[in-house]
Image (cartoon, rainbow, N blue to C red; front, side, top):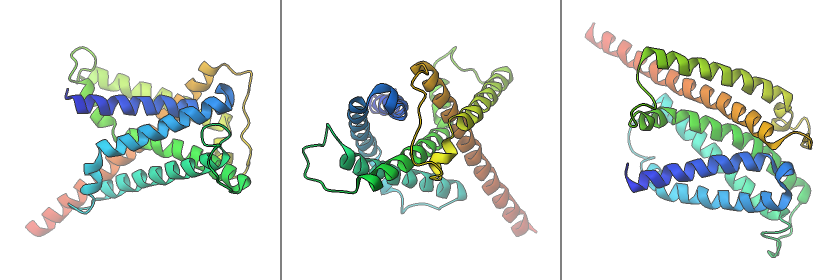
Length: 236
C-alpha cells in the first residue's frame, strides 16, 4: 500500500474515533470535548487537502444518480463541519476563549447540536458509500476477507444485527428529537459506562452506513438498468 493511501486511511480512522468521542462530550468532559473537536477539524482539513483532486474533478465527467448522491452527502458533511467550527468557536471556554468573538450563545448551541447529530448521520452514510473500497483493501490481506459465498452471507448477517442494534440505540437515545429540534437540550445517562455509549453509537453508525451503502448500490444498479433499456431501445 502506498504511503499516501496509508496516511489517508489513518486520518479517516482517527476522525471516526474522535467523532465517537465528540458525541460523548458530557461523559468525557467539556474541555476534552473542545480539544478533541479542534484536532478532528484539523484532520478534516488535512483530509480535504489530501483529496483535493475530488474537488478538481467536480466539473468533469457525467453526473449519474449515484454521483449526485455522493456529492450531495459530501457537501452536507462540509456544511455541518463548518457549522460545528463556527458554533464551537463562539461557545468555546478553553481553546478559543482568547478570540474577541461576540455571538449569540443560544443560537450557537442550537446550531452546534443540529450540526453534531446531522453530521454524525451524514458521516456515517459517507463511510457506507466507501465501504466497497474498504472491503477491497481488506481483500489484499490474505486470510482476513475471502470472496466466498459463506463469508458474504456471514457479513450480511452481521450487518443485519448491527442495524437492529442501531435502530434500538437510535430510539433509545431519542436522536430524532435532536435532529428535528423537538428537544433543544441533550440528555446523557451519566451512570452509563463509556464503553456501552460507544457501542450504541457504533451500532447507529453501522445502521446509517449500511443504509448509505445499499442506497448507493441501488442507484448504481438503477442507472445500469436505465442504460440497458436505452441500449435495447436503440437496438430496436
